[in-house]
Image (tube, rainbow, N blue to C red; front, side, top):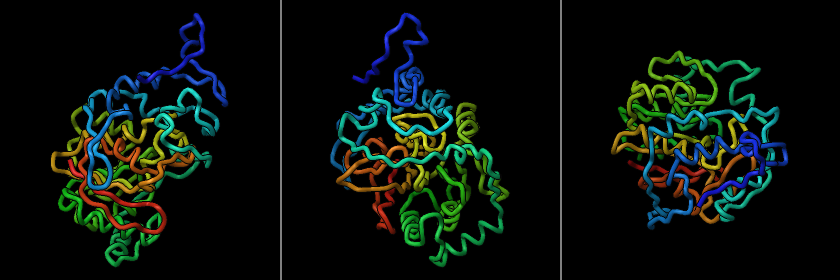
Length: 318
């Protein structure tokens, strides 16, 4: 059973705080997130063997996950957290099954575009990227090999061609260029910070807009979801987001909620089947322990080739 240990006090506000290396930490938001997340965030659930790793299922409370504004909150500190609070240790390590290493970044200004110019995506810019992709020469953010690994996976992703595609996490539209090159009809990009898109068939949203559109029934469904080197940062605080041990799992579950039956999830994250770990607060590496929970309810469909480094693309279907 999930439990957070509190410091004792007769004052309710004080009882919601726990001591950490960087001061008092309010656990109440995480208790509320855990309540709405339900069995989705129970990483002790057993799965069944799948083609690449275990397949995990859970009842996902979509309405509750989108209503809960605490999921998208900022950590509100001057600097990004550099240590996992002891009270959250078991949740981040999945009760000791995931190793923790130190690798620290403070890039909260990037998350909300503070003190930097808002990116503007232009038609001429995306056309150039699409042309490079079609020639197999687009370096993207992670080099030509990784870009081509994503392009290969998109050829095996149901719903991308002629479809409406949700892209999660993007500052430069290299992934969008790959999706358009694969034949997508329309893209909606979800990103922490504001982006201005001048491309008619590429729209952008920040989390609040995305959440409100879902709750107002104006978001619509997607034929496919694509994300590359984004989800593994969710809930670690590096980009200004609040600490959340299930941030990555919830982000993918929300994608599941808005995907049509028969649609797909194409995801590229750091992957090592035999070693799951967190480099706090930089990123996560997924293997046979956490990957099944990250992709709860999604059916394993295709494993792409490895690019340069340990990023690897998998395709799942709903």
